[in-house]
Image 1: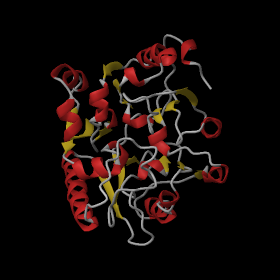
Image 2: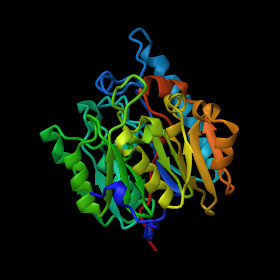
Image 3: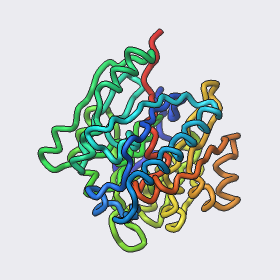
Image 4: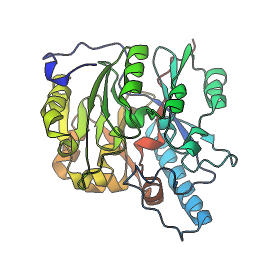
Length: 325
């Protein structure tokens, strides 16, 4: 694992693109606040008296609006419906159980909540391979770690600099150092691990709520990162040639760190985020994010954010798989 204090001034670039033009999204069928995840996710706001049907109806509207806006912006959106059984209240967050890579690798991840493990669906991967023209060359299955009570929740736990093969990860009950080491070895990544805490001193459950690495920017709530690692993490991000957009604790709490840069079929950059996140950013931050012509695409998803404790980035699994000739 790499020590961020020892980075070189210029990091070597690899041949994997940082952003994807194809994405996978799972349309909710029985969305609800998940009591099995609430203990480690301070972003969730559960209401025992809230009607389940109302939550599902609202989440479905929010999901469809986001998916349509991304399509209209030129991103290729592959939508798969969730199944009613088994009940998977968080199924619309697929980035926690799977990631797709440019060499044809698919990674399956160990997840903390037992009902989230039911979200893993090999039929989705087979559909991408057989029906949508993508090539899957190998599958790396890390789910055996669940038997050891060790977890790594996909690109929630991992924020990937795909060009330089660096994975940023804040440690938490959902992000285990041993599994990080296995991921690094199997996929030839360097790991930059650190502790991160919210304003109340609680560990932040996923790295992707405090930072996002795009093509030319890195949005990060540096105040969350433990002081002994903070400067080193920022310096490593800067050494990759990215402009740092520093987020406040309040902006992180409004899911500003949970943005994701994508690209259209024609290669134009698109930054996806929620309306809550966008409204929390100031003019200078928005200018930094869009300095190279990036277009911001946002949607209002208050039900998903409140009950799910995740935002737009969590709803998207980027499909970096190679397309068949």
